[in-house]
Length: 397
Image (cartoon, rainbow, N blue to C red; front, side):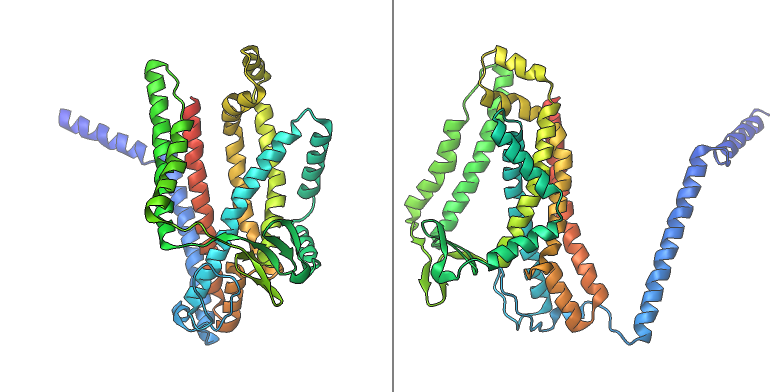
């Protein structure tokens, strides 16, 4: 009798758990139905696309990647010639996009922070000029900036009458030409020593913070950082006898030889992205600093701390909690906005993929490659910045 009653109670409990009145059951059923509907729509689209491709005798697949491209690309970070495959051409385009994104993020961050802090200055003229800069660049389309900058670069004098803002630096309608260090295999050891010095500095900085938490004694990181970051590469250069010769650009014929050059297309794209994105970053920085309660400033000033030290050590670390999340969006926007390079002739992944589509007819595959490149870069930036955001938030608690 007891066993029968226990079995009935178990059955009733199970029925209640599996009944439609249970919110968990209803939620699971609706989720399964929605996922099934989405999969059905995706499957129908894929089947419909496949049937249309077959009916029109359009080849599909990525076999074309290993065919000769015959595509000339003016700027490439790796060796490339038109006899290479479409895969290598697309790789060159992806690296060109990554080159713009990384340099643009670094320069826009530096410029944006400087402008954002300048807007908070008590110097009336400086604050108004930076406010004017922000309002102008934020309220005009990025494409207009790019076209204007590119037109101004094209209006510059030819190489024979190039502008020289600095010794060895030439600006003409062929782009920006800069001197460069003559690289040799010995410099690889110096670069490795620099990386080791930076890593050692980070480890030492963490160790000093840990020791300070134990005994309350602050320790200076700057002398050790100077030895590691400057001393190690210098020692490596002495031991490996790395040459320190600079290759200076020289005018030969109708163009410059030697040094390194930034084409008008790349320079216009980079400058436009940096100036445009820096205006948004400046407002983010200004809002982050203003979010810190003024009592923090007053308490630090009461202790006799200088304003620069208050900003670096007290205000900015707290403002980072407000700055980093919207800053991630600006980094992602800069990366995606680099696709406007096609408007001024810079051969990024969009430009190379569009030419590949026109030559091979592989539109779906070409668009999928563009999406994959931007998705990879954007997710990498997002993952790194979210990790840094979590690390900063952990340090603030």
